[in-house]
Structures are given as structure tokens and as C-alpha cells.
Amino acid sequence: DVAVVTMPTGCVCCKVRGDLVEGLQSLAKGALAVSGHFDGVFVETSGLSEAGPVVQTFFADRFVQRNFRLDAVVTVVDAQTAPAALRLL
Image (cartoon, rainbow, N blue to C red; front, side, top):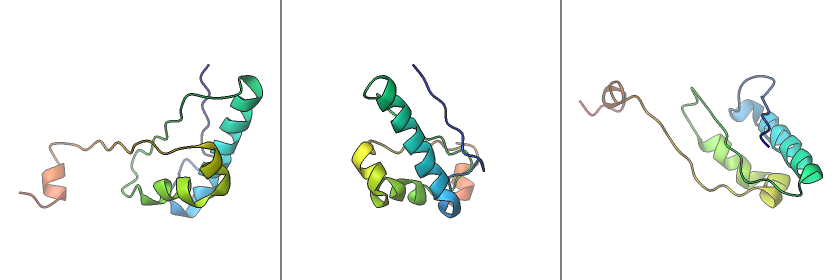
């Protein structure tokens, strides 16, 4: 089974990180009630330039610490514009 939780503001940046915690709580409680576990969670952060606040959520919130484990952070960049943005040209 797949569950999708959207953030009410559409954002998981540092100012509304509480929405991410609420979304994770909702996923955990729903999954635990149905099957006792879930296989994984993918947090998609299109347009977010700084992953730090999202990553910090996995270490700063007790509920998230007890029920989730951050396995990886995957970043996708536009190969055509990234060098200029990173001042590599």
C-alpha cells in the first residue's frame, strides 16, 4: 500500500517544519494501525535550496527520532545551469 501526505502549505522549509513532523506522525500512525510497520518514506523537496532544515527534523523531533531513520539525502541538479550557479565556469 502507498500513502501520500501533502503539506498544507506545500513547503517543508525551516519556517513550517512542523508540517513535516505532522505529516510523518500521520504516516506512522496510519501505517502502524494497518500493518504494524512501513517500508520507507520519501520526502520530495522540489525547489528547496537547503536540505539542512529537513534533515535536522529527523534528529530534532523525538517522535521522528523514535519512528524514522534518515537513510540518505539525494540531490538532483540541472547539469546545464549548475556549473554557473556553483561558479565553476
